[in-house]
Image 1 (cartoon, helix red, strand yellow):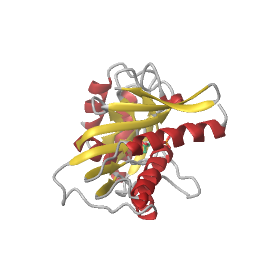
Image 2 (spheres, rainbow, N blue to C red; image 1 turned 90 degrees about the vertical axis):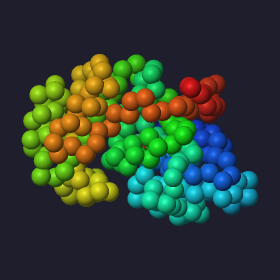
Image 3 (cartoon, helix red, strand yellow; image 1 turned 60 degrees about the horizontal axis):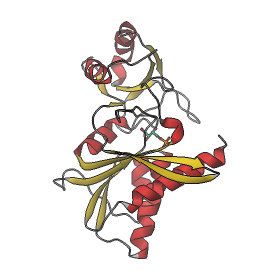
Image 4 (cartoon, rainbow, N blue to C red; image 1 turned 180 degrees about the vertical axis):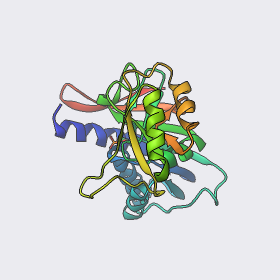
Length: 235
Ligand code: 5RP
């Protein structure tokens, strides 16, 4: 699949998700290159007057910066008592709509916001659809810096191959928006995502892992069919 095709799929699916946002709505704004298009198109719809009175809750500095750029007013979880709709990307989606997230190291805030939404819409291109979680993407685990070594040992005991995520265009490890580090763990196969999610979060020093089990309501999948981008819905 060419890079151009991937961009087309992401744009199409971002636009489709932005169309689901209605006036007078509190929207969880996810992180990543696909959600970035949704944020752009929500801003566009607000600017055109197609929708009004929309406020966003960002899941990362990236989402915050994009929301400001595209004119979406922001609020916080201290101010609102609910979230109507959250739009967020994923690194893998299985047939039960379970996800691996955290490719952008934002899964902790994403899980908080996405889990609070009445409707959680996931936006992905077709390369993210897998039969079993863990088949293509390592599982991100956010860890308090002082606990990195003992947490890595525990993750090895669980059968994983852990690696500290390193920065790109930045020397040293990736530091999350909360000031923590991320361990990417390759598992040969994740047979029971719900159990693994709880087991990993129970290791002292772990803040949150990227398994999102039973949270997604709708998956919008960007595909290229007969050379044209289109969106398939899994609900
Ligand atoms: C960030 C995430 C992203 O949503 C996920 O990595 C997908 O990103 P992209 O749309 O760029 O492929 O979980 O933590």
